[in-house]
Structures are given as C-alpha cells and as structure tokens.
Length: 146
Image (cartoon, rainbow, N blue to C red; front, side, top):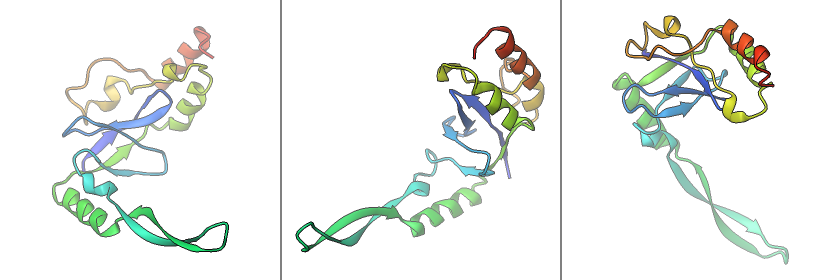
C-alpha cells in the first residue's frame, strides 16, 4: 500500500494525494485514506424517507441524507484495485506537534511540515523546506508565537 506523510496546516493534519495533489484532512485515529477528488463515490450520499410528527401531531415525510454504502464500497474497491488507497504516516511526535502548535494564537500560524530527510523515501520531489520537531519547539518558544 502506498504511503503518504501527514503535515500540519493551519491546525489540521493533511496529506496530499500523489495523483491529483489534493490535500485531504486526516486525523491520528485514521491510518488509511482514499482521495475524494480521485474517487468521488467514496462520499456518495443517498436520501431516505423519514416520518416526522409536526407540532399539531400530524405526520409528514422528510428526505434526509444518508451514506450510500453500496456506492461507497464500490468506490473503495476501485481505489484499492488501482492501488490508490494510501497509508497515512504521522510523525512519531505528532501529539507533541499538536501541543506545541496549540500555543500559537493565530490558527494560520499552526503549520508544520516534515524536514526533507523524513520524507525523501516517499516524496523524492519534495522541496527542501520543513523542520524537525525540535526546531518547531525552539521556534515557538524563541519567537513568542504563543
């Protein structure tokens, strides 16, 4: 299974799809992802009829959105067949990164990207920016971003 490195942007963990470059939101509890831009069916929604009682006691039918599990499963199978389900790799200090960045008042400043050494194997075309967790802690404490 192909791997993607997670990075923090404006206080959210993201991972970039290598095919379309779309950034998808990820979290520490979810270790796999399928790009919703490449596989739209993965978020398919259907509508179900639901009976509802009004204030005067009469019934009426409402349409409410629900996950279309059949379409979602087909999209997931297709993504797996194309080797486009990705394992998300979080840095060993992900919780520490979240704690450090939570001290930054402006959410736009809550950003962290792995240094090049950490991602070279997975993203050989990655640019040379990024920082170690130690550098992040030092930056936040030295520059009073909190």
